[in-house]
Image (tube, rainbow, N blue to C red; front, side, top):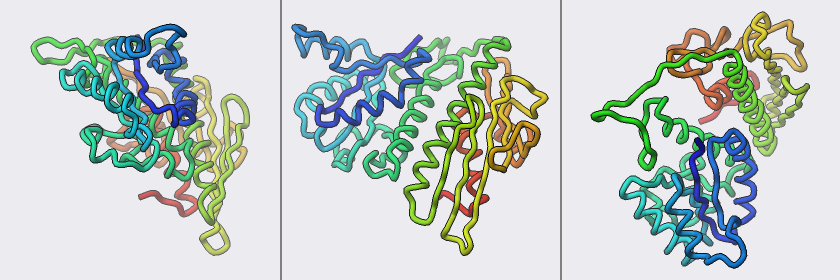
Length: 315
C-alpha cells in the first residue's frame, strides 16, 4: 500500500518541485508512494480546507525548504505548524528537503534529518540530478524502514506490534519476484552511474562518459587528467536477466563495451526467510561481512570500486 506524502513548497520554488517529481517517478509507478500538492485542488474548492484535509490524511510531510519557504506565511505558519503538531503525537513523519542556502537550522526543521545528505542545498551540488538521486535514496530508506516486514518502526507509520515486540513474517519468493527485484536493482545502478558521470564531468580535470548499450547493458569511462599522462577507468555492466551461467544476475567487467563472455565480478539476488537482497557473487567485495545490500548500496559500492581505477576517491 502506497504511503501518502504531502509536499509543502513555495510557488517560487516550483521548478524544484517539478524536478523532484520526475526523480520520484519510479517510487510512484511502483506504488510505494503517492504525492499530494496544491496542484490537486480543483477550481472552486476552499483552499485552506483542501490543504488541511490532505495534511490530516498524509503519512509524510516533505517540505521543500528555501528562503522563499521560510518567508511564506502560509507554508511556514500554517502547513508546517500543523505538520509539527501531528509529528509531535506520532501521526506524521517530517522530511525537510533543502533547496537553497537559508537559515533553516535556526528553525524547528533543525530537529529533523534533512535531505540531501548533510542538509547540503540542492543548488550547491555540482550536478543537481545527483542531489535529487540522494533525496530519492533517502526516501527509499525511510519507506523501507516503515515496512513492518523489515522489522523497523518509524514515527508516524502504523506497524504491527505485540507487547513492544516487532513482528516478522516468513515468506518465499518466486522467480518472477526475483526477476523484478534484480531489474529494479539494475535500474538503480544504471541511474546512479549515469548521474554520477554527469557530476564528475562538471569537475575540473575529470571527464566521464556514460552510454547505454541496450535495455540491459551500459558502459562508462572516466578520465582523470589531474594525473600526469591521465588515468582512465572503464566498466561495462550487464543485467543477465536470471541467466546464472552469465556469472551472476548483474555482471560487470572493467573494460569498455565488453560482451557477456568476461567478468571481473558479479552481483546477485539472494533471499532469507523474510527479504530479498543483493550480494557480491565474486570480485573485490566477495566475502565481506556486510554482505546484504539494497540497490542504492550496491550502486555506490560498485561506483567507488570503478572510479578508484582512475585515482578518484570520495571523502
